[in-house]
Image (cartoon, rainbow over all chains, first blue to last red; front, side, top):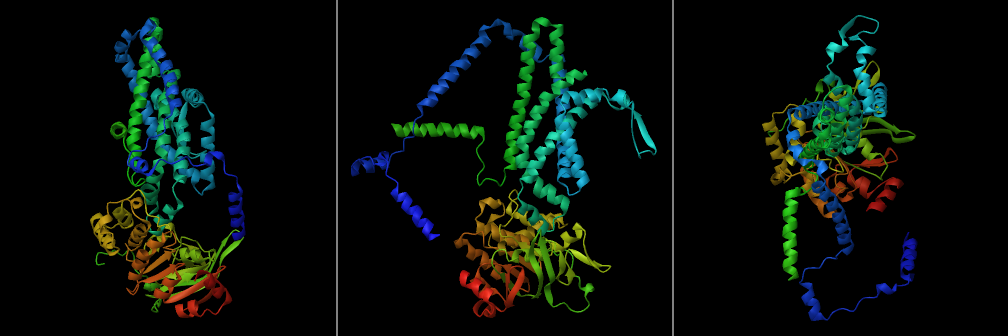
Length: 334
Length: 270
């Protein structure tokens, strides 16, 4: 071992010094003492300024067209934005997304736990479930469900080949219920993988400590493992919800009028207003995603408890600090 | 320690004869694949004593310790703590595993301190200590009262609202010890409690462990701190390759080892 170190040592010494490594001549002692008390000037990056300018010019070009191109018809946007039809569609989008999000989160935990269970039947069945519903396009699942009444006119539960309890499919399941089931079925498949990744990320020592303390099994999961897993689950799961909001626009194809569906319908009734209607739909989808992003930020902060010695600043705090820092920089440059 | 909570009671009804040993290990065998980690260990630990287990890494000492509170399931043999079989029961001529719930109840009576502390990072120091008692039915207020007493006993009563990562390694391990004391266990197991600590923090943890000696509790400590073993150990066990090579008083094992493997190990660590 010592031999290897000696050889390495020799190797390093043998490397010829590059000319750039020659020390630059130092300022004199008095100057050095003065320099030592001043704030260090940060390296400037002119390339970044050029890139930023280029991007800004392109972006402004586009923004300009928003004002100069009269086809946008901005005047019509405010009236459509809060029209009863659009708001009804928005309501359906929110309802379908919210129910599916909650159902698929709980379902995702159940499927993930089944997948990780020691029981081979449970883990195989949940693997198959994820495999099927990750493979199928959502629209296919939705269309299958809407034809369920033709496939199984009555739905029943009972002992195989024994007595059955049966209900008519169409009376049991409204279109909205079918839509939510379709969204959830496919969403559970994805969210179970998100949950599984989160659960796997929790250190084995946490499980052991909980066991060693004799904490009951269910509580080990709800109090010790899940809260720690949620830290990595939340960002991915919110991503899933954002996807879900947009996926809910597919409900239009199974005759449910969600936000997109209403905009589409109104577009065919008022062909001259197609562009403003698309703008209205855009604004609402942007608004929904923005609200979710803000909620996500604070949920993540909540689950970051104990992870950092000091919590990272919120965006507001960051802006305030950046301004204070810039001021200090200007002051010392004077 | 008046506020201490005791879950279950030492089951003396199983053995009408007075039990002298706090812990007994009988023919412990543990196999991982082709690797036999424990090769039929027998060990008796007397009540109220400090037993120190030393040995090279991979000798099976941690596995043995973890088998005592059934974190590690033995393939053969069994463990008795306080006169009660741990994790198993004798039934119809076989040793059979107990249901998880029963094992958890038994574990709560045995303190366990990990090398890496394993505090719950998302809970405050106080919540780390109250979690197990509350989950097993202690009233929250009583659990908090007890936790404060325990924190004071390890010198950390000012840290109850802090999170584990805001504490130094030594402080975290002291909290972990306080947490292990929540059920006032008669037996406390320490798995290399100072191995993950910076050298200057080892002393404060050893001081807390030292304060637990002579209180009637039985301590079993796996450690590399030979000086500490000599100072507080009543009994020293040297393990190598899954067997107990030599055991006896610190003087006998550490200063006058009879076996060449013990001599060889000590010459490396001393």
